[in-house]
Length: 400
Image (cartoon, rainbow, N blue to C red):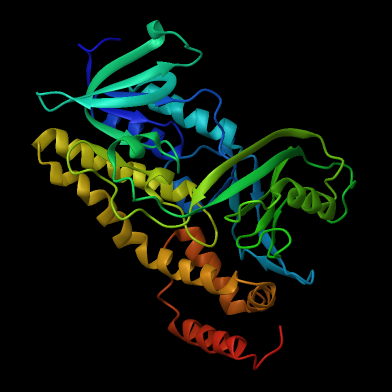
């Protein structure tokens, strides 16, 4: 490739957001370069709700397991089961899932390159020149550069695209997540382990400000934790969780760590030729850290905006991505942010939070909102009951 090649868009990052944007743009007839790092796998529980499977046409072959319940575990080891009434959550292995998404983008017509974004410069004709280094390249001869109308930054919470093009003071807070992919137990070797259940630990010793988890993926299981506290030993915490789940002696297949943003950036575009999506934009749900659906949704919105911009030349199209995203999911993000800031602050409150999760109304509305990615408005009395139950817990009228 050389500077004579001009793409409508260069997408930096081949995770769910970048791959979705590249696929949709290629299907719209736009020329796309998808640039992704070699061998990068984000630590992730791998849960995808039915809404994602439906909206983004995910084949059954990628679903390695199905969770039919979650179990919330309190600081005092109180266990609260939250069964999914008549449904399930798909579980995927991110190594396989992300590569399938990248291959789908290539099949749609996107050009794939494995390499690392380095910088960009602007040309007099309104295009940008994107510089990147091919995987394994160490010499000057390995550096490549192409031109594009737009750059989509889908390269994670520490986005190099954002650092190069967006305000330096616009950095969203984040937790650092670490997990270990281990072999799932067989033949009843771990009596408390359930292939169809996700375990979530709310305990300060396992995460001072977030949570720890055990998410089964069929033949493998993700065991992890997250925190914003520097110096907290996540490896030690994961070791404790593995022991509690009966996974202490399971084979460790790989270990991964990465930052997860806690709120969306105030701006996702630079007003001229760059748009951020996924973790780079902060499109991750507070409290839960769920990001796959929101990443793919933001990637789809970005593809529509870039397509409109290339067709019209009106750069205002890029600014619609964040507006449309927040109009759809902003209220949920605000509620989840309040939940995390209040209930995750100490073990006393975590204990009460897990106790609230026993309530049938809470369980039903939680699963309805998660599975369908929208607030449940058709049961106002359930919301009213939850409000007064929350007040009772806040004022300690009820015991945990």
